[in-house]
Length: 113
Image 1: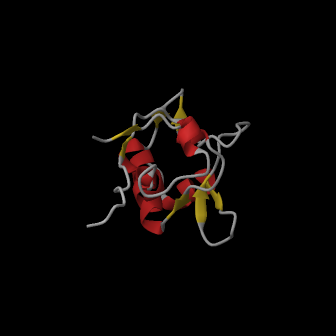
Image 2: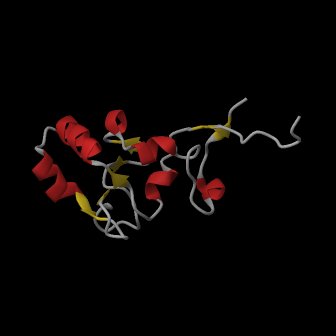
């Protein structure tokens, strides 16, 4: 029997704080197609308006809000995701599949019981 505690799972409270954290939100070709369709845009229009080359130049990332400090362009108000129904895997995986340094200081997710 192991003495290690299982890694806790967290329940997102949709605080939107992760959407204001600077960095890359990488998207796949499949996610481009889904998000574009959700927004009523062609894939080319979506790519031109809402994506950029990611920092390590290996694919596309969603752009930040103009004039913001790393806020996702799809964040509306304090905590509403305009593409919630089709948000990227990276977004859906936070904070259980991945975390950024200092995430616990800003994230309002609660530990699942």
